[in-house]
Image (cartoon, rainbow, N blue to C red; front, side):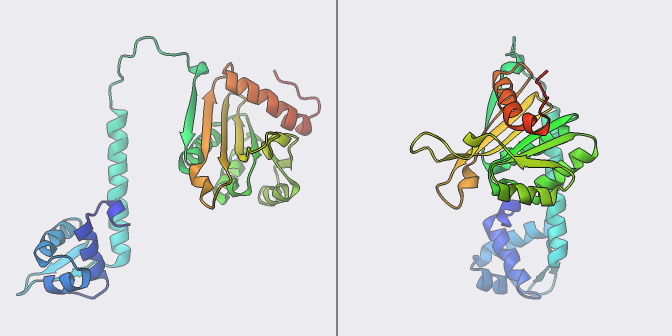
Length: 264
């Protein structure tokens, strides 16, 4: 995990070795971490420059790791700084001259993986100004974070309508969002397919302000199926995907919420 935060292998092993003891020499660190003694000094110099290790200039030199809380805060700060630097660098890029661009309302993009789909879900919810129609197709999709995002949307005046695929899930969602209208969707095809051998399950279907759509699904083939969640995203009132989904959801959601509702 330390390597994922920017430390190289020997640096991470040396820090862990020091974190396990109050202090130690290069020899002690080498014996504990199995890092070659000649490489320990290089690793310690890097760790010291990052504010993770302190050095006592005795003979031999003695090293100690900063407290765990201090180390975590330091790494977190460095990570945030790099992320912000990346944001600034990317924001400052000059746009390439692509000539005539494709009309945005005709674009459909694919998204792979739960993290990316969850992030796009959050963006759509936070960007909605009038209405959010959401069908929760699987219980694993309805997280505490999603509930908080939907609650915040309703509190800022967005009309939030939620459908589920069964009564058990309806009760779960209603308990978390007591002031939101939640009902069992009439879109039966979300939870089951009439085609033999098709075990693909629609995991979420989100329509924001009737002009942006996110549909995702996964196949129930293992415990890690959510990691392989696949989705498609489209934006624009005239976008074909958005238009079709809007009409399907009007049948399965809006008619339940308001029997006289018609697409405008």
